[in-house]
Image (cartoon, rainbow over the protein chains, first blue to last red):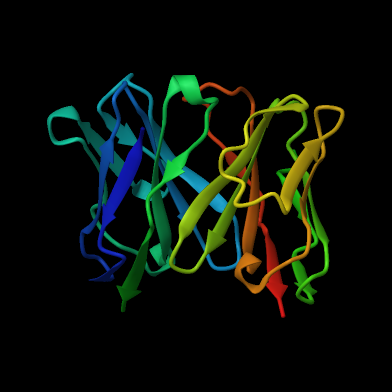
Length: 114
Length: 115
């Protein structure tokens, strides 16, 4: 079975500082990995996805994530935080034999201080 | 084009009543998923459809929950005899294919409050 662990339910950074949101996964078969962002009272929006083409994945809004098989990690980073990045971020895993079903982590709420 | 549309956006119901939640997926998307988002529980998978059939309904919490999809398009999630613990945001998503690398596109959800 697949699972996702996001370390830290809440992360706070200053505007302009590095953003690092941690995600570790567990999967017995090669996984596909995703990061989604959820703004208040909205649905989830895809930030980026890893599908084995490249280990460093670039997404929207300046975010990127690196797949590290040896560490079973897929951490999300952004060099310089902006106030508009404040939201909840979800890491998710899926595999080919389960119909595209996503298994989500618990989420990390990102706060950005001026 | 239009995204995934869910209705109603908010629903308040009394304990014991039945509710129906509707999802209109993106046109042409063959796979459709229902999730539940509640405080402390994160995002829980409920059920997914490929066309009109549901290969995986393992996440439905109890037999009070059911879902159907007609015409390979609209889906309804029905909760019978609602309980307070059913209060949550119910999210629907669709994807072009059911493969693991096909991203899900989410609607804005239906916030259900059971009083």
